[in-house]
Length: 279
Image (cartoon, rainbow, N blue to C red; front, side, top):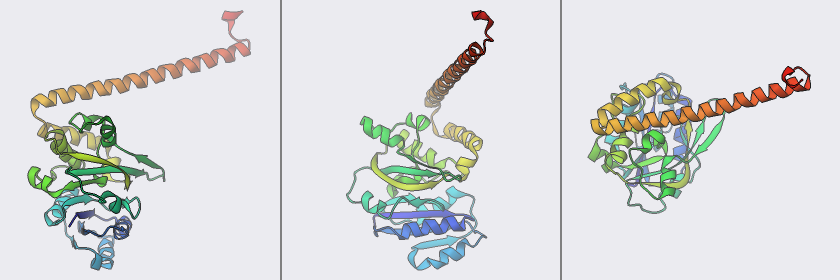
């Protein structure tokens, strides 16, 4: 079997229905589908039962968070690759998997583009940092994970990668997918290929986007556990340089804007004859 698709859900019945239908509408059929529900109380299990004959495995029971639920899916999965398409996220169209697996790849991870869908209805298509590195002709490294990102919803991971490097860290609420990519790609050179395919529409209403301060704190703590001390010093240094560059650019923009406004005010005063310096 080529692929195991894992959907994690907790009290998101409508999002779950959209995700299930998106999976079942795929023209590609060489996959199994696993749904891991965290004992939802909003009718999610009723929706799962409606599609139960098309779901390879499902369970609804209490868990300790999204990463424990994802790990349950990994342990049950039988496919060569795994993908995590959680409730609320949907495939871009019905041919995504057919396009993705139209050939075989030597790489252990495959990734593509996503469309970010915001609560206000705004949609933004992003190719991500793997696309940048693909165009530059080089592999992603640890550096890339503080200047870019890798969308886990649009990434297919060979199961043997989890068998070799372990499952998701269940200590975290938000950042364990990023941590896993840093460990496998950034520190152990696991191979990845970017495919120029828009794969997933990603719901931006999740916890990782509604609690940015919590994400930053969790990232820092997770990085300290993962990255060797000597590398961490360099990593933090480059983070600081990156932040300083962004601040400088922001300041430069603000300075230019203020200077432009000041010039407009001066012109306005000249027109009204209020600029006494020119008398």
